[in-house]
Image 1 (tube, each protein chain N blue to C red):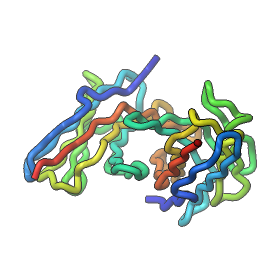
Image 2 (cartoon, each protein chain N blue to C red):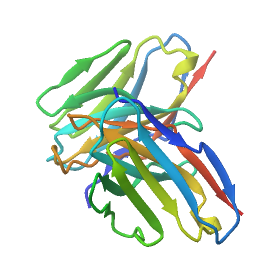
Image 3 (cartoon, rainbow over the protein chains, first blue to last red):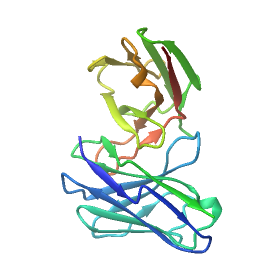
Image 4 (spheres, rainbow over the protein chains, first blue to last red):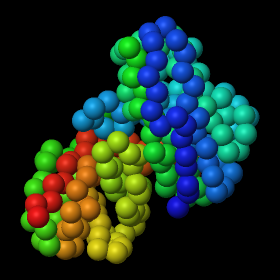
Length: 114
Length: 114
């Protein structure tokens, strides 16, 4: 499978600030990455599909101006939560897809907004 | 809309026993199914997958069964160990290929009693 890393693993910020989360594909070039959000004791919900060199595709109900996604290289996608509020506190997880449909996930980033 | 769901929220098994985790899906067009294991505070880990043209697939200590007639998926874990304690998600893909997206079920917690 693919090896995916995320940074930071945990972040605490004040309400109104912006937070950037990095997702790296360590062992292959990923043209497509995915961003998910997971609230406690719930399943993963797809937020957006990140495509290298083009705009991300957002799922219905996800604000693209609030969750900025940049996929500038084949190994790095970033998610920026702008003007974060306590309701944005969640576990954010990225994934990459190999040549098949299987997705491999990063370790996740725990965001806490005070 | 279409959804993937699990029958039971929790499952408690004795160490050494076999575990069976069930999942129902409603999209009859789904072509590809994956089981993931998620430990607390970590990202989902790929366990095993199966395509719709198969009924059974075996891995190391795990077996996935697919019954397309009743749209049912199950994960069998042989000789369950304490390290198997986690939340298990089934996920399905309705359209494979470049535009494929995963839809996750609700998740079931497997608790292994020593």
